[in-house]
Image (cartoon, rainbow, N blue to C red; front, side, top):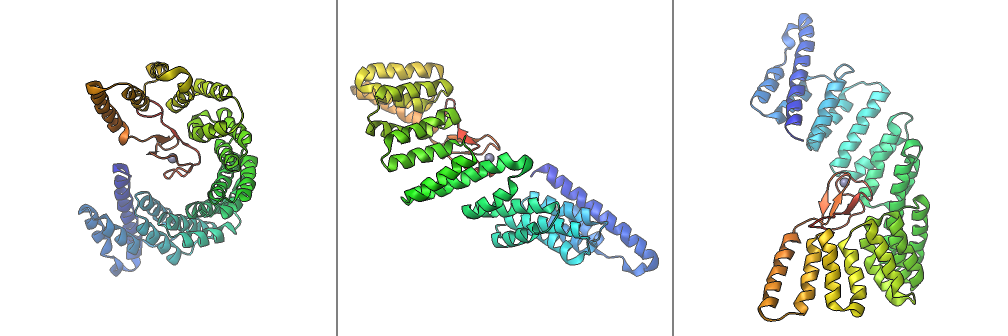
Length: 391
Ligand SMILES: [Zn+2]
């Protein structure tokens, strides 16, 4: 949405007015009195940079028929891309109410309208129209189902989303929708776990793994579920799968993992070996800090701060630095302690407003991990940011 789209809109309207003028010109031969003043008005609105009124003039004056359909659709699509959804709805409804189109063209316009409704947040209308369209044979069927699926995702109607996604998970799209279905089951499992309905959570997680055995999120939820039910060793083996599935998500599992190891009879060394193996795959400061914490009682504060400092030399992060300062603050006094405290607040301020996660699909950034990108609506594309201001 920028200059390019503005420029296109102007060009389109000028072209449309031109076409209308030309069509009217043909009629004028038979009926000289039918020249509409709106062409001139439309042009004036454009010249005066009033695209709103130019759009209305366009709709009023350019008859919808098979010849002008593409122009109307282009205008509707352009308005939607510019975020002017209400005007896009007007353009598409105008086509449907005025044109006698062949069936395929009619279905396409209805599909555009369903997309407008979805973007405008008119979810009931988007759902109804897209379901009607998905009953029709032809090219629009799968596209209509994708609109229905998005409605259910927005409404968090996961059971219904699963049903529709299963119809979409065919051919080339199979992998993409199987991945989404796995996440719908993860959503159900998380809700059940939050309500302490362990049986429902376990059932949903089994499905999540069945639809995508590489889904690290399913391992994370299964680990939390086992932990909540007191199966500590099972929790540990579920959480440890994340290293082989998607090691960037290991930091998300550290809290549950530390708790499970603490409550299990397994040796602490096994915990450290695992963390060290993870660290080789992903240089995360959270993993370093977990390791350091686990060794603190044995090796003491000084060795622990050396260990963290050594990691920071290779992978400097501000979060690591603040932890390091914390360790030293405990062991200093007087002016040195005051200075360290000031230094710490500077370091904290540096990262306070910085995002911790970024979507690898669209670049969306945030401080919290979303499994479903709020911007591009893809699943598990948001990952922790590594580097000075991140992990
Ligand atoms: Zn995204």
